[in-house]
Length: 68
Image (cartoon, rainbow, N blue to C red; front, side):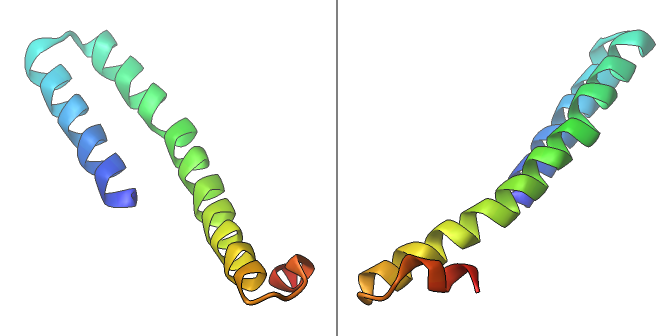
């Protein structure tokens, strides 16, 4: 997931660098900088917890065990 986001960000920045203005490049940098990485960090915490909880439930145990 991180690799896909970083490649898309690099592609968008590269395209904007060659086809857009400096102001447009700065907007792309701002929009794909910390907001995108904040979403990625949130996803990186949420998804493994969801998978762990589903695995614990599949084993027939209490879902709260996944949070311990």
